[in-house]
Every structure is written in structure tokens, then in C-alpha cells.
Length: 420
Image (cartoon, rainbow, N blue to C red; front, top):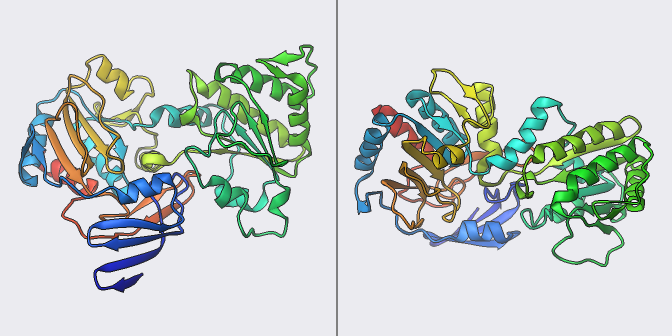
């Protein structure tokens, strides 16, 4: 860090707005204003450079002190028959405090990105999987298969950081790496010979993956096309997977359309096991945005279960359907919703009949004012913390970049718990 009068320059900053938790950003701080100087993407730039405004808590639209807001939260929770803590876009300490509060008041927990996250979790619970880390991919991959979506939209620095980095642990040239898109074309067209595309519609992806697995296992296929994809193209992909030294299949389940994506992911993961009979192949599920991997990891080590767990019965009770917060709100099963969103002012609570408490990033606006709004600090900007990156194996430290009057999510949730 360098300091010149009122200007500070921070190097090697971790971005909490990037699922990869890129740790090479250079950030300039002038009083309360933050600018990304180097290595930012569209998500990091927007996240770091969001202005600091509207820092006072509100109850029914009226500015109040933090203590008054906390007392009002206490009243809502104590008069509630069913409390849900959702959103949960926060860091490790915020996640720990959310679980502690849920245990105290018998609430259930969920995350705003739960649909994609649980599509992966259900496969892991049912049949298991063979997955790798970002570092292993960076150092070893020779064939990358991107399934279902253009991951560069949500992970803009993935290819620069992981597939075509300046340096790798081994001497193999990254220029020899091949990339195949299966199911979606990249948003930016490329004439590179390293990239090929096998397009298909989202609804056809389950059938296409099933045929690809059959080809990996040398099963005869009589059809010439499946889901609009030529069998010959899938045969070439199967041969490429079987002849690679270290292939990786990656997907971002949160970007997939349709229902029961876990079945397609299960086919994909079982195919990876099939390839490993003769050569190396691993999966790389991508997530990590809005702290989804973080809260899932904390829930696992605190309770033994992932998100969508309830504490109403006095012990952790996991049910990915029963404790779907959106389903519960739609069916008017919730009295009080505690919505946590400390990274993005646009990730607001869903409309519902429930009393709503929002712990949100300063500057968040609403079509319908919640009963309580408490602006909170953003991890990695207003206070330090830790966040898990997409591959779940590393919790990276977040630096405090500026001093603000905003409490952390952990501070507020702990204060609410102390009043109950």
C-alpha cells in the first residue's frame, strides 16, 4: 500500500465481486471514493466503485439510530411464527452470525443463488463427483469443455487467469490448449483454431450429454443427430476427451435454464468417472458470486448440512424443497424475511407479504420500503473478512480499504441475536 496525502493505493487486492476471487487488483482510495486501477473486470469495477450514500438505518422509511433499528428487528422476530434468513450475500463471519441467529430464533436459511448451487450439491450428495481446483486447471489442462453457457459472461477473467496465463507450474505451452463449447456459443466470436463450438438448445442438453457419455463408453449409436447435434461431432469430442492427458469439463449451473439441471450435471459427472478409467479428467463447477460458496461452506462445517436448512425444530433440518425461501414466500408461509445483500445494491428482496428486514449495501433503493433497512459495510471495502472462491478450497482474506460508519453484517446480526 502507498499513501500520498489523502490518496491510498492498495496492491494485490482480492475482489469479493468475482467468483474466482481474483487477488491481483490495484485499488485507489481517495477519501470515500474507490477506483479500480488495474486488473478489474465489469463486476469488480461496479462493485468497488459504487458510491457510498444513504448510510442511515430506516424503520418504515424514517431515519433512526442503529439501536432503534435493531430493537424493531427484535420485535418483528419475536412476534414471528416463521422467520427466514435469505439473500445471504456476505462473508464468512456474516454467514456464521446468520447461522447463530437462525439457531436462536428457529429460522431457516437460504441463499439468493441457491438454485444453481443446489443443482451441484444434490449430485455431490447422491453419487459424488471428481472435481479439481483452479490452480490444477491453470497448470495442467490440455482440453477444456465448457458445458451449457458462456462462462466468460459471469467470469470475465477466467480464460486470462486460468487457461492462458503468463506462467504455469510446468513447461507445457498454454498455446496448445483446446477449448470446446458444448451447448452455448461464446458471446465474443473467435477465429482461433483453439476454440470450437458444438451448439445446442438448453432443452436438448440432457439428451446430448447422455449420448456423449454413451460414446465415451463405446456404445453404438444408430441415430445421425441428437438434439440437433451431429453424432459425428460428439464422436470427435469423445475421442478428444479419451486422448487428452488432463481434460477438464466446466459448467456454471446458476446460468443454466430449465428444471432438474442436477440430472444433466449427474450425467456429466458420471461421464468424468468413465473417462478416468483410461486417462485424467476432472470437473470444475463454477459459482462463488454473492458469497454463495462461502455461506454453503460455513453451513456445512457448522451444521453438517448445506443451505436450505431450518432450525425451527431445535436442530438443523435440511430439505432443499421445503425450505426454498421463494416457494415459502409465494405460499405465504413466512412472517418475517431477513434479507442480507452486502455486495450489490441491485440484489433486493423479493416482493412478498412478509415483514421484511434488509441488511443491504448502502445506496440500495426499493419499490416498496421494507419495515427495516440497515445499511451494512461491504466485505473487502468497509471492513476486513474472508470469502471462498469458486472451487471451494481456498478462503481468501479481504482487506479493509476505507473507514466508514457502516457496521458489518456480522455486527448487526449479532446485535439482533443479543436482544432475543
